[in-house]
Image (cartoon, rainbow, N blue to C red; front, side, top):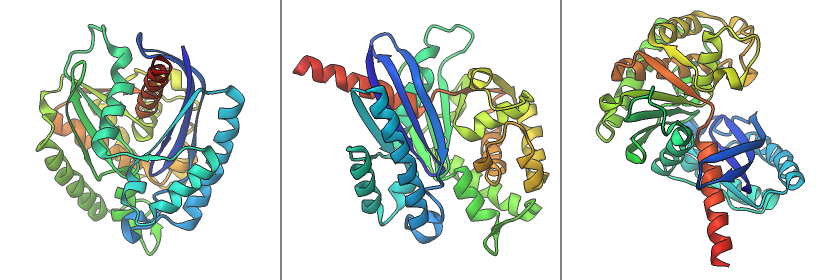
Length: 323
């Protein structure tokens, strides 16, 4: 087993996984897994730049993570940055800050690379299960983008499109600098049209309708699962590999889009950082299920973060053999 640290820095959150990994068997044992909402992508869709306050929130989380990585003694650290830092004109400020704090340069990966890591993390432990038909469609609904990957034991096709819960909220649900509470029917219609156009784009590359099992990743999907189960708090073990029917996803989405900020915040399993963006994230999930005709979504707590950890372990092992 190789001890590695993986950091996934997205548009809405930054996450850390320190784990002992055997890349040959697919075994991964968590030592520490945590998330901090930093909203790095605050305003990027509008300004094209990372806001100074968003960078400082992210660097503060990095300092916390650096202490944990040192304490647990990870052999290798891999830091992957996704949608917001791809889009920003001042991403060099972000890269320098991370390098100073963690000693590694963040890899600002492409959407296709992001999709492949997500697929690896989500499906490596599904191998051999006869209750989940292949091919899989892995859908990672992030803050700024959504990744679509179709594959069996390996990726067949992948595409990243710019529909994420933060981007859709900022683009369609904000008026006069504040999130509309609740959104108007016209706002929802416009957001839905934007999502459908992005799905048309994804379908040019990825055969979405060929999938036999839909696997959903990231906070919007896991939060919908927590709501569907009426969990008293956020419980990763109850959420991981849970199944949520299309009818339940539709019911939850409609409820979230009708509710006020206070009503959403009162949901026991709701992370405070998702209160304003969960309606948009749920609508992305619902739209995907309708497009592919999925009767349910299999929810995974294992995603790009686990894929990054597997890659880091493979690199560490290769380094040992090469040395």
